[in-house]
Amino acid sequence: MAFNPEIHKQVWQKLNQSQIITEIDNISFIPIFVFDSINSTNIKLWELIDRGEKVPVGVIALQQTAGKGQWGKNWVSADGGLYLSIALDLDLDFQDNSHLVMATAWGIATVLRHHELPVTIKWSNDLILNQRKLGGIKIEARNVQNKIAKAVVGVGINWRNSVPDVGISLESYYRNKPQPNIASLEELAAITAYGIVFGYQYYLAVGIEQLLANYLAILDSLGKQVTVNNCPGEVMGVTTDGRLKVKLRSPGATTEINLAPGQISLGY
Image (cartoon, helix red, strand yellow):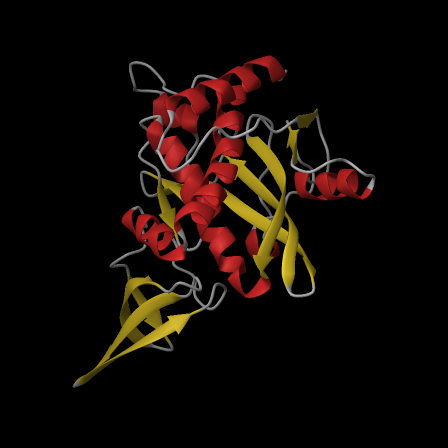
């Protein structure tokens, strides 16, 4: 499968012209390295940075041989999917790393929704379409004196690749649609890369409270029934530090707890 960088750049320019929200000015185009097959876009991007490549910069692989999702889970990286990583220079307090997670998930989802794709978010940063997993995000950061100085945001989105039962590809979603609003892998790549930067810049412009309100507005996990230590509960929201708010119910009493990513699996 070939990848046309010129189409990718043209789509980016159109996204700037569309002005999705007024708080964000034009976002400078990020150069992209494209590889036919590599082990991981995150790994390759860190290698390029360590060799002196200027940030921001991105990497796309048409196929990954050792892609990883959150918590070290394998990410199916068959030919036909989007495998993209974007490196950003940041000045973010280490304790606010969850803000970057929410900002990038919200940013990507919002730009996809701008293209009439009804994407929601499964806490904390999975992209959901028709109750199935469309994509996932993995963020790796480098810290300097308790500051996040650089981060690589890796994203996998199902385009025309085979997917597991809990997944969905855009090809299958568009199969019965009259006209797909995202017509190529290049367009999907531009939307995704733009969304990463868009979400972070929006966070810098408005702060965590407004970002969180927008994030919750498209959070698929709200109201979900869960079980924690054999106690039934309900997802009530997310804290400003990215923890899941769960109300637990027991005979004659309720209590609310906050869970960090990795402490609970919400499933699909």
